[in-house]
Amino acid sequence: SSDDIPPVLAKEAAKLESSWDTSDRKNAAQTIVDLCTTHEVTVDLPQDEKKARKAVGKILLSNMDATCAEMLALVVKEFGWASVKEDAKARQKSALAGGCTVAEN
Image (cartoon, rainbow, N blue to C red; front, top):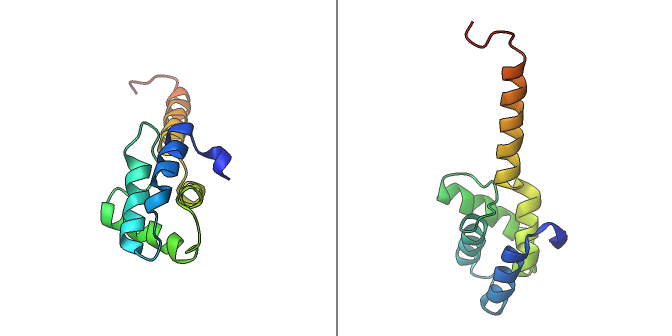
């Protein structure tokens, strides 16, 4: 749901709404990729921009009537937040490191 979207991204999506055009899929996908990767909160899209655009394009294809904000919410639901995943990885690493009795061995 759009409740999961941070205000900064929701505001940006709202600004883009007037020029949002899903019939130009490549441009619409690029808009979402830019939106997802250029703020302090980022979506965990593929690192390669072309792959990211293709992945977003697939979601777009099955949601051609989605608004920019709805599309953003769908992409977030699909890929999750990068920072959340980083935190989880960091916690997992520290938990694994804590399992050793002597770190040097």
